[in-house]
Image (cartoon, rainbow, N blue to C red; front, side, top):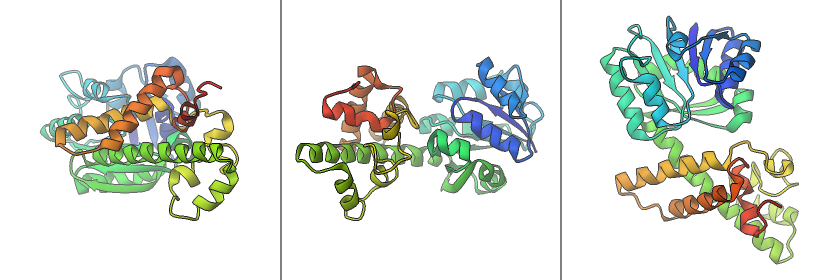
Amino acid sequence: MKIGFIGLGNMGGPMAANLAKAGHDVTAFDMSAAALDKAAAAGITRATTAAGAAAGSQAVVTMLPAGQHVRSVYLGDTGILAGAAPGTLFIDSSTIDVATAREVHAAAGERRVSFLDAPVSGGVGGAAAGTLTFMVGGEEAAFERARPLLEKMGKNIFHAGGAGTGQAAKICNNMLLAISMIGTCEAFVLAEKLGLSHETLFRISSTASGQCWSLTSYCPVPGPVPASPANRDYQAGFTAAMMLKDLKLSQNAAQASGAATPLGAQATALYTMFEAAGAGTKDFSGIIQMLRGRLGS
């Protein structure tokens, strides 16, 4: 299949490379020349514009930083929807606000093309390994068309429902992740004060009622889970800045829908403090250092 790919950052680059590795003809665009060089080395054709990457493609995948970038790339007279052939399949894997996703869904419908909001979970490691989780919003028929492509980039593919529900699932999931990570970090900080070793708390809680992904798969202290960023001075798999972005999306959605999310609001405040302290590029699990009172140590 001829595929256009727009956005070759830490996530998009390896996702596009996995599509090329699977035998698809991928043409990609990014503002970064270095990202395009890396993509070319993976067998991807360079485009000089987003429209150039999309032109003639049967499917187009986008992975962009925020809602304003998605609107800029997709909408208006110069957006990629304007020149799309009927039947083109568009898959946006950016994490953005639900309202923007639904706006692009509506614009795609007017152009007689298919659009899916399909944000991902799994971080840079999952993007490289092709094991991402996709949360997909849009029509069932479009989802089934997209599934073979998504399976080249991910391991768990979920149809969340109609327009915007992929984004809804992503922000709900990441709000829960942020809350559970802070709780896990607090438990380890308290254990340290009480003289309980990391290994002992891990062995007990990982088999008791405190068990959660933040503990057993992404433990915020070195040792118990060798693959976790805590063993690499919190080198990011998923940055604190990206977590804060998702938390802000969750709180905007909560306010718009009238949902009560007091722990989500507190998690947003704590990650705002963490980023303001200069730790935005650290892994989000590194917030344990702030809770210890020795940020940057």
